[in-house]
Length: 190
Image 1 (cartoon, one colour):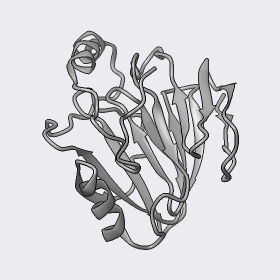
Image 2 (image 1 turned 180 degrees about the horizontal axis):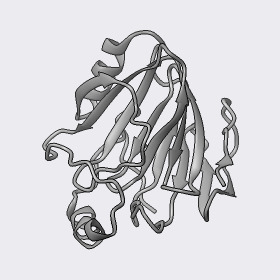
Image 3 (image 1 turned 120 degrees about the vertical axis):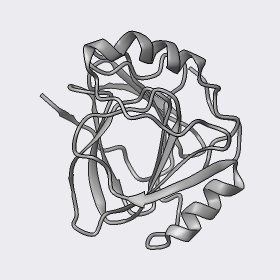
């Protein structure tokens, strides 16, 4: 059963609540939100880095603005497209996703994970190993994807049992991002 989760779109005091399959959600005072996702049966997620969600972080409708923001903080814009409708993750690279047009329901963390309602302007940063899939989107969805400068071309894994051990070793070896792709500040750790 998927547990819907729609964080508020306003800035507030820091607080934490549990969401989904043991996920910890924390609102930061700067308006960003952190999601700490435990390892799942099928998806490893990241044991040391949280997912970071920035609401209204980029101008809606302007993919070039999202790309420029990412580039200014050391993240290489790599593609413009949508989000796959199946669970997948990248074991060798962190990924930033900026929704520049449309809306999407995105599940993070694998089966039973957290579901986010993302809209134009929202950015979600996925540490290596974080499962994600599109549960439904508007027809006009456009997402800009980016990876930290110097990272390997991202692999794409799907949670098969035979890939787990190698994936966990690869995730552990990925260098932590130097900067948050939206704020340029140090990337938070768990």
